[in-house]
Length: 615
Ligand code: M6R
Image 1 (cartoon, rainbow, N blue to C red):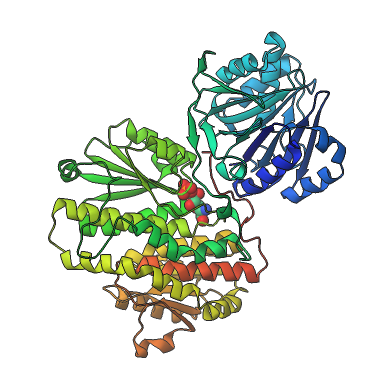
Image 2: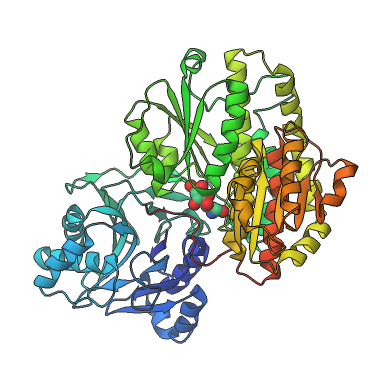
């Protein structure tokens, strides 16, 4: 959460910082700020709200912007204190010589604050970051050296951080440090960049150094020095960044979310390429590192993820248990980490994360690694912390996802889980459901065109979105393998439209939620062919009897059942197993058009951030 940017070179730092922050807005967007340094002074500008407010301020500071060739910037997702100007970064110390931006949470900030107050520090914000600024400044007072001050200060700090600091007395450098929060140093010609994520700097350079935990870096325009925590210089490990700049443009769509929904056909093609060549051939999954013997020894699977990725994991449970015959637990990472969990070397742990930086999932995966389980990571970011923790890295290659609401990454995660399931089935030489597996492979290959058929004709979905946008509450129901999509559909709707939407297993409706039903409560049912068709239908009848408005999203509906529903959205036919990868597209579009109709900020919904890097 939060975005960090830094620049040192010969260009106007302000321009680079603002451009970088605009590409980081998806990480947080409740306030922003920059510190611009030249030989004589450091100027700090901050604004609450969207980045545009900061841009307006900088327009009035052209002179300073032109002469400042070094600077640090920040876009905030509030953890400590309201999103006000005072709490916005950068933060500074009593003498204002030291300036700091920070991503993460300092857990011992209250103790540190008390100690620093006794030493004379005066605080003007509620943030933990300001405490770090005072601490580094205090250490600077002792050493008169920003590198040493950072090394000393970070030893006293508990928690997660990526820091970027500048000091008026050392006007040629930025000093950075990190622990459990990402930070990369982009390498240019006579200029260098710092960012918490690649999109902020990809248009300037493709070469970078990923700072490791406990390292401190000193970045000047013509040099980068990395030190370990005892102050020893370590060799620079240069890597190439994986993204193209074009991937972060809207390409003519009104919102990134809509663009990303439309990309899903290609996302499926990409992930299948080279892995699924024909229904008759075995799936190729070279990235999965367990041998046949080890696969046969897997006694259970634990899937760990948050939010949308967690919902993908729930679909994974249905298919892995049915086809690969391995018991699966799916758990929200935040719940996994504060209890005594049981895993061993015969457990396959699967972490799912679009960003690969979700703090709870990282902590859970570290916990499970200690228990010697094999860790497979399904992620969209091969450069992420989770990717680096994996034994088997299963990239979903969905391309950068900018909209806070996850769409194409969900489909990609589902496809990854389908492929893994088929792979395990084939490696184990199982016989039951052989024909279904062949059909599933066929359907995966046909999936892109089915998705495209949905996104290319959205008239019905748009009309239904308009009709239902006035409701304050929504219930999504489904059973079996589509149940996780009821959760995901409801999550999509609530996060971008702020409508109170809840997903339920259809069978659970009568155990409580039915009490809420009346004609003000639309119920959306995922009604697919398969073993639960009649069951879901009965649950719809029960809802109708309470006067709920009923919407069906269905791949087949018996003509006799049509009158039960107020509205019907048809999706292409497919087996029960492939259903979630088809009907989710409708739910994404429905949520999108409702939010769009209500005039909501679709790509950057309030209170959210794309990458949740705090526990
Ligand atoms: O990057 P991750 O997949 O680990 O993120 C987990 C959740 O924060 C994320 O899926 C969130 O629920 C989505 N933005 C919802 O659309």
